[in-house]
Length: 246
Image 1 (cartoon, rainbow, N blue to C red):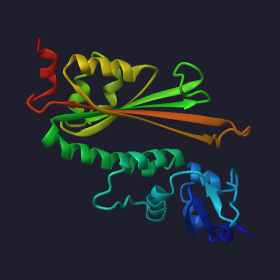
Image 2 (image 1 turned 90 degrees about the vertical axis):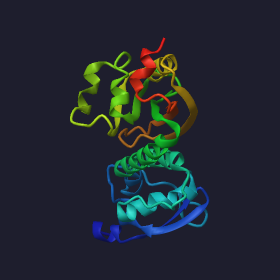
Image 3 (image 1 turned 30 degrees about the vertical axis):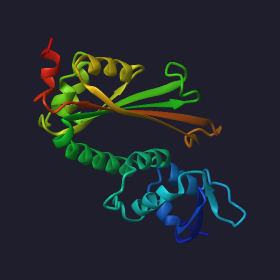
Image 4 (image 1 turned 90 degrees about the horizontal axis):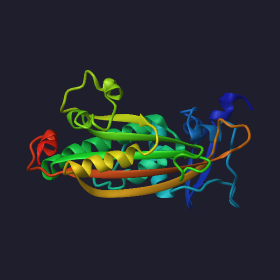
């Protein structure tokens, strides 16, 4: 069968016990993604006893992943409240446009919350490797800070100033992200935030594993994500005030 015929193939999936039917062309829309690699022939998943391709992930959330593959747009119910879970699934499937769309939606929700809870900041640490729980042993560690530009710039005592060059051109009030590489950045940022009167609202940890599609030996990669949300009480009018109090 030619490539055109392969793309027109009807595919049945069993994702965590939930059955879906779609086209091969839909699943391979983003060939550089994990799910693209699953269905372009390089790492096809196994089948269940009904002949459906089986993926051991969250079946309910896959609905939104599949909708994005069909339309390249993130479409969620009005009261959808599991963006964090969907972000984990998008990260597993490595669909970069979906990952970015979810980040943008999370940013909108954070900005909407500022009027009630003061300034908010989110720190995500992602460890990927053979032993991802050990940040200094065979693991890649990246830390993503999500906040207003002026808030991120106020953390120069912890973040090297050269790392903030990519924020040039953004307004102080713009919600943005800064990605940093290296171990223990999240912990250092946490200590700094506590010292400057930020309050840790909540923290979450999630894990996933997958075969590295770039490794012909079929190496299993483990990924651990740590997400901290911090609040600066709204009676303070700017992030700099926290560092000037004694």
